[in-house]
Length: 223
Image (cartoon, rainbow, N blue to C red; front, side, top):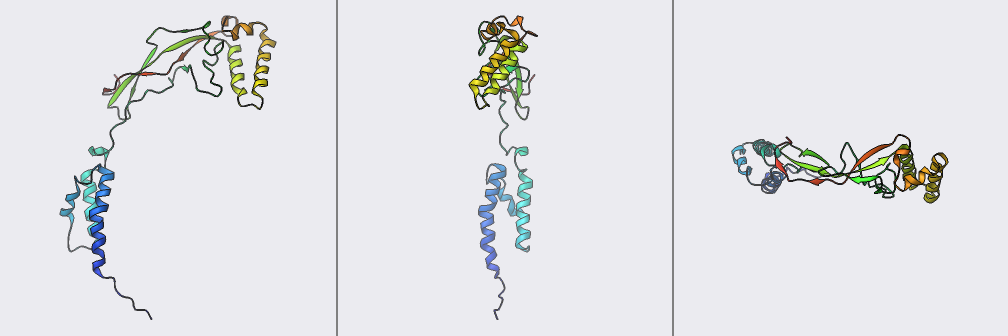
């Protein structure tokens, strides 16, 4: 029969030593950015007449409590920088980065045709964005290009955009052209050249944004 021998107390010494020397500073590095500022406070919490587990709890808890566990006490990561969103929430993008790389979708003409499109005078549209904590902000300026559109041009663009997901994209786009000419005849050719959008159904103008230009970061929230 095997005889069970009691665990010798000296085994706990290297475990406790390893925890104090390596584990606790590593833990402090994770939560406070440094292994040292609060580490020596564990001397006050140690007690020779406590069990190993009790001493471990008494060592770690005051460290975490004293150091605050990160950002609230200044030990966490710095606040993020305010970033300008690529898409303005109230405007369509000049380049929506879609399959097929089409620009100025729903505008008459091919890819922001110059005949019915014009770049508006600066500054375009300017917005302000805060960082995640509201401790800083920056301005975001979006240049604008204005293009003519109507329902027929919008329908034609949507049809072309769908073609890139079809088995025969070229044949699908050819059918898009035919569908327009069946209804609007030769007017379709004007619209494809970026001309005479006003002659189509429900003519409108659409403002499209270029990618934003970010201003310098400034302290405090947006005014």
